[in-house]
Image (cartoon, rainbow, N blue to C red):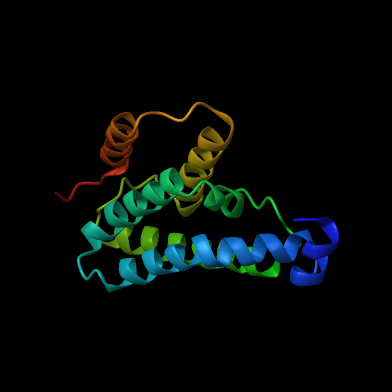
Length: 148
């Protein structure tokens, strides 16, 4: 597709990126967030949420551009980041109240885990699915609090 076609159809590169990411990725991201909020057991919320986010990152590399804020001029992508930060804050606060997370673990730590994964997947060698899932389990074990 030529530059003129992209500009006419999408209003430029950011418009094209927003269209693709909205269609492919943010729909799934918001579905994960919505599903997370329906889980009544606080102890299960963070494991579900983090596993689902990491799964999305593995399957849809475009989500890493959202998490890395690659396109800061895209209002839609920045809104996705804002909503993601909001759910991180909610999850960590609720998990601390129930002692489901280590007390020193913070919402910025959760954000950093997602961002670190985005960087590793975007710029590093993609691990096998088995290795990736094993590392997700290690990560969850490392942040788990006192409750089973």
